[in-house]
Picture 1 (spheres, rainbow, N blue to C red):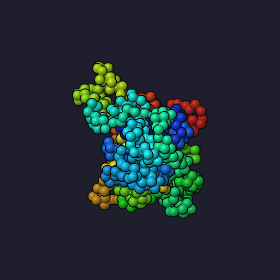
Picture 2: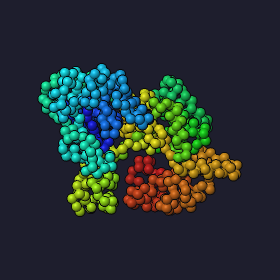
Picture 3: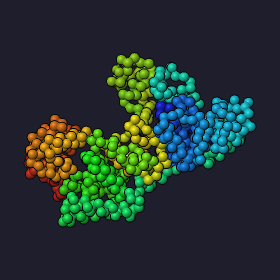
Picture 4: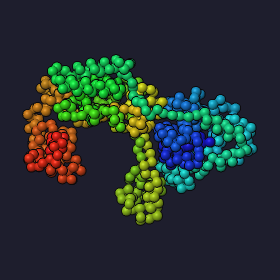
Length: 600
């Protein structure tokens, strides 16, 4: 009977976290529950997980609206139906056209129109009319009572009680950028949209057993589930696992000769060990796809920096994904990839802000728009923004809003209105507010991404998932991070100027030449690092002078100990002392010396 339920992912409308919605259903003995958030499917993975945890059958749906006008509620019969709904949402976000008054002729979806919006004779086989409690009196004298096979009980759930109804009204006023007192009745839900006990609903509709039977049939026909145990990334780069493995091995050994020459036995052994783990865990395609992106960008003359835990991999170094030698720096591959790692690995690749979008565009074209998407992120109501929004809703003058925002904990006690706003703010803190784009995460999927979520089309111009990186990880996606860094653009511009003026070509990816350059070492010692990403702040330059830093390892250590927590604890001062006087302290155990002597 619970065909039309909103979580707080119905942005600036619903008030129930998914966990709360499912828990309330469990407490009332509800065995099957549908989630039908408004114009999105961003909460569905959380919903399915929570339902499984509570022993409730989950049903996936969407409530389609144009503005405040309800068009219809659609329920997916199965995962195929869920994909149909996501494709419709995605197409709408691409075209920006209103949803049609009549739903498409879905294959695996039931459609429920609000009672009174059309005649029974207009309904197709998979379409029904939904009747809510407030429409019962009208039903008694309507010819619809003779067409109960086409009627279902559709009592919406939006909030927990009358108190949260008021929270809902405030959210609607925020959404409409309106004073609370100016909201029209059709802009917010009726006060009865809370979860009624099943027996009460059945008693209310006792005169319409056919309607109840139809409702139960729809719920019995529908169910959604997700596989949380398998990797969802594109499985193969070449088309099959054997060819992927052979190609990765060839590229790795070619890169081994490029990076280490032909006689480095320890590097060869490290490559062999890493390849065995990569093959065992099924990550050959992931490495090859990343290599493919790097290959394209280098063919275009773009500079990149591979960083993060991926820099621990010698294979990544040999594929030129990264330019840091893990053997020289004693970096452990297992930190990047191992069978017991709880979170999936990912590569972080930085490009110039001028070139990043072209690289992303290549990824979309190379791997297909149905299988590629940027990762979304969800902005929540937090901090000062809550007080500013609620201040406007309750008609506070701008000066009072500014004062409230600047010091909410002090100002809320001054008068009744601001106390009230402060109490409301505590109730909506961390509620989802709007969808946005992750800093750089990209998914490249084996299946169409709409199997799992609808996609948005932000102004950036690339399809973006409605859920965030935490949901993607839970489903089994490993993202590729393609980020922008202004400093890389400056480096490229400098290299281009040198090439034009002095006819000298500089390969910035040959890191070793810079590490050995005496002029670079001298500049480091004198802390001449203005304009150098990460090491140009006054505090960092002061630290470099104190250390007389002239090598890469000391620079890495300095970039770690400059952090506020380390400096405030006194460890930075102690490091400087030990750096200059390495015999001024002793290790409490030989193992500590073995593991930590590089940084004293």
